[in-house]
Image (tube, rainbow, N blue to C red):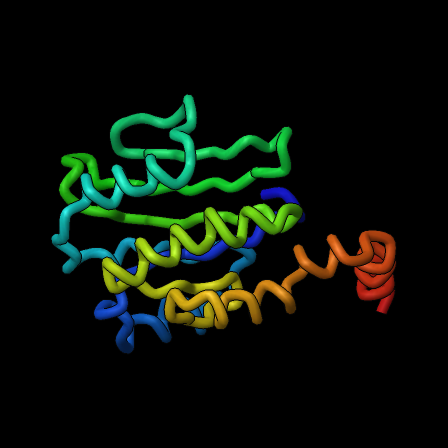
Length: 170
């Protein structure tokens, strides 16, 4: 993941229950927890979700039928990407996440808003790296992006790196 990207995980809103506490709030590892259990009761039209993402971001030239990837043009500061992992029989989503390139405003106005609309239509919520849950509303997501490391880096990369260095010393 590039420093200028902001990652969000996607899960069905109706799957957030006590399971959430175990999976996210108690995660003490340095890795993202799996969200497969949030998708176990989701049985909506997966091909239409994939087709909609195809309209938002270009399909990547890697992956396969169960590990589907999308990748924007990183050379044009459009390093947006998404990934949906399906079960082996392709009937269930197991993971869904996306990253937005914060270097260009059009990534927010075009790509992010389109993905948020997809999420809203399908009654998905978003989970950030801290495990916080957000409705797919641009005003909420803009606030968390403003407070993100990615945004802090883009505003002042030298200060960001100096702060990292200072944190390691203390």
